[in-house]
Amino acid sequence: MNKLILTLAGAGLLLGAMATQAAPEDDRMKLVKHFKDKYPDIKMDDYVFGALAFDPDAKSQYDSIMEFPPYVGELEKGQKLWNTQFKNGKTYADCLPNGGKMIAGNYPMFDEAKGKVVTFEDAINACRVANGEEAFKYDDKKTMGLVTAYGRTLSDGMKMNIKVEGAGAMKAFEDGKQTYYARAGQLNFSCANCHVDNAGNRLRSELLSPVLGQAVHWPVFRGGENLVTLQNCYEGCFKQVRHVPDMPGSTRFNNLEYFHSYLSNGLEMKASVFRK
Image (cartoon, rainbow, N blue to C red; front, side, top):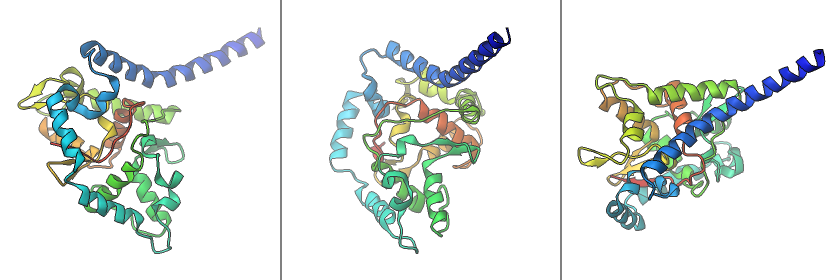
């Protein structure tokens, strides 16, 4: 009898762990089904283009712009920063996994030792501090912005691969999910109201982009050389619904990025692209 109880208890723990791990994938697959049912003619891989997936003419214009991107000079500045040696002679490539190549799709990740979500920006700053340099300000577009803009291009073609494993990671994921679906601000809107319920519809003159694929292409360059990060976008969305935003790099925004990025798992990254 004791053996049977132990066996059942062990099975219960295993099933509990499996259920915990399955929950994020359930969330993602429900959204995949939602968009497949609503837009059966759009291929899943095309969601990496955001709202352009709904507008062939706009996508054609985008393709033309991307042949000669107007922000190349900014990316070159980012490349220079990326390759500039620290005082000890090392570079980012010396302290990031795989020399910084094909890794950005693993971020954000949950760091068990630190008990929190770690973004690609956090990894950049950890590299700097470990090599005796000062950390960049999280939202400084001329330093952190340009370094990550170039650094993420080294992962172009990698499929988003966010992991949610363990109780701490699940808690952070659920916190990000709560932020994404919670109505807030004077307009009482949530992220999902626009990017799930109304994705593909127009808000004034602009098509609303779908949540699937949203996380794969940041930072973006709007209207030329104006660099905008994903968390800058969160700030803007909060303000548009008249809600006080957090600062980029906050726990709430990092957890939101963690949840948000997971939903694009399996889609190819294409960083630092043009957007209107």
